[in-house]
Image 1 (tube, rainbow, N blue to C red):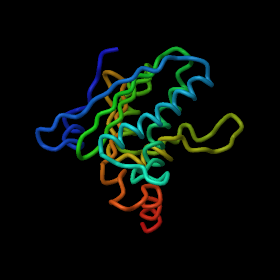
Image 2: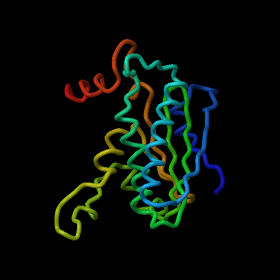
Image 3: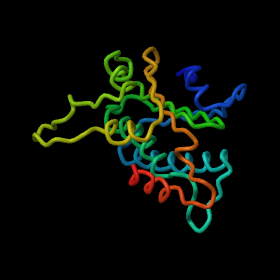
Image 4: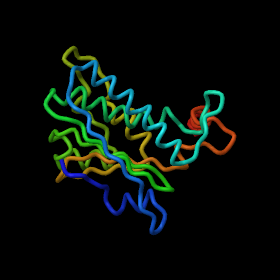
Length: 193
């Protein structure tokens, strides 16, 4: 897999003028289901550390200004899609792009889902996925895009050619003001809206 990077538009969203993003890539191999779940947990823990270090966020008394819940909703849903839909045949390639104004996550699960122009249109326009509303038992459910990726991403883009999903979270939406706990702060913000 070639290294990938988000579009100029995304880089302008997350970086100040003339700033180059801090970039890291990881490859997660297909393995047993339990091991893939463990990889997702380790990825999230690593993500918290990278974001905290980059944005100079200190953990005090087990609390952080980082909105851990919002960060994990987006990243874990992308990981879960790979675990549930990879069919055991493709590695997950992730890219993390950090800028002073925000963060972008890139996910390539090796499948063709993100190479479909109709899927790209739906995702980028935050159109609810209804074709997956019923499982074989007839119970209704919403997929993770509707519940986790759309509400917690400030910008979403799909690279059709490479099949990559990019999710952006602005710094102001994942880091609480100084002296405030991240998850409590953002929970109260959502309640006020």
